[in-house]
Length: 479
Ligand SMILES: NC(=O)C1=CN([C@@H]2O[C@H](COP(=O)(O)OP(=O)(O)OC[C@H]3O[C@@H](n4cnc5c(N)ncnc54)[C@H](OP(=O)(O)O)[C@@H]3O)[C@@H](O)[C@H]2O)[C@@H](O)CC1
Ligand SMILES: Nc1ncnc2c1ncn2[C@@H]1O[C@H](COP(=O)(O)OP(=O)(O)O)[C@@H](O)[C@H]1O
Ligand SMILES: [K+]
Image 1 (tube, rainbow, N blue to C red):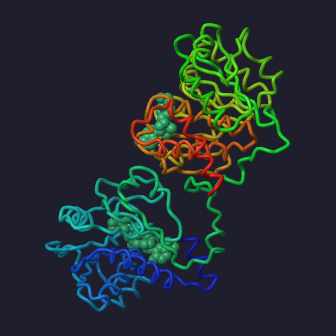
Image 2: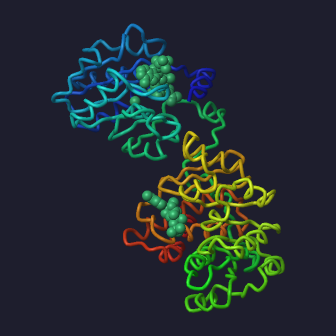
């Protein structure tokens, strides 16, 4: 954002103009509340400046506004000083803020410039504001939240009802726990020129169809089932076949032209009791010759597979050819603490790893604890093994080894159910088999998976997800 501000100024939109529009957006959100008495908590930087602008506009709209300032008002600099000069209403020291009978609080203490944990008067004010029960509108970020990581910087952090942010969402608005501390998020256009925003070259996106839609191939009229891509799924052993079956069904629903499950005869008999459109093939002496001869475009290894030498061999054979590989579940047990080994196996090949946090920690070890955010952990891991990482959860991050990343916010909590991850692995393979680039296929699959769960609603079990995909794909096509 600092760079956006600089580029905007170079294009003739000065910081003061951005701040005026930012304050307007905050005042606009505040006017949604039938609030008479409003307290604005103003910090020492531009976040406080936005607060002063909002205070002025709300007073002009006949609200009773008091600004409570952290530190010395005379110490404000630049645009913030100018905004404060435009405020002639009542001002108190933050220490003296009175939250009794307040109808609305505007938190303009710290935003992007937060550099250390809240302490002293700022921490006390946040706790008092929170305790008084009035609704809270946060300016840019709830004070105490790190907008880059989604984690509070210290022990004290505002929990807002509404967060008004500017120009673009920040990762911390979507990553947890940040998303929960922000409440409803309002993204305001404050007049930064599009070219100034584009010049920054941001490489992280909220996971939405606009990011990947153009990269997902449409079936061609001249095509046939094998041109739509053949997916092979490595089956789990006898009495552990459900997970791989879910992957196979999802791959077929995603639009792969053909899907084959390969495993032992005993395992295939279980699959045969459930499946019709999916082909079954006994894996005698591995599956290398099948993968090569049947032009398999994408494979899934891991769901229900067991961490056995057979699974390791299947993975090695999958990685040996020119095909895309989705690795899930038991692959991460096979490579516990051995990210380098996994990276060597992937080599120059195209792979997607779909760990949840526990599996991620198992493979990438200490990185999970020391890196700054879920986004950065996923990006670092992607670079380390040379693959796309899908780090799952309520805020699933898809990170490519080239630095691009998406963060999802559309999955409902009832998606956290046994087998849902197996469906996701198959979905990714189904899209990759059709030729979608790896990062886009993985991001699209994560979004579609969340939308399928939303379409089903509460009571969802993983078996329902593949069958919900046609409607979701249909609505995507008509959007
Ligand atoms: N393009 C946009 O999006 C636009 C954004 N705009 C707005 O600008 C905001 C960013 O402004 P900003 O850079 O001045 O930082 P801000 O958050 O006000 O804090 C910095 C001050 O706080 C201090 N400080 C830090 N931590 C502290 C602590 N724990 N306890 C005590 N002090 C602490 C820090 O001191 P220092 O670290 O230097 O010691 C410094 O003095 C952004 O969030 C948005 O609201 C709009 O105005 C226009 C366009
Ligand atoms: N709180 C949550 N909200 C939304 N989605 C979630 C939440 N927790 C987990 N998920 C999603 O549920 C799926 C669970 O996958 P996973 O943990 O691999 O389960 P399994 O191995 O049983 O299939 C993932 O897609 C994950 O992103
Ligand atoms: K704030």
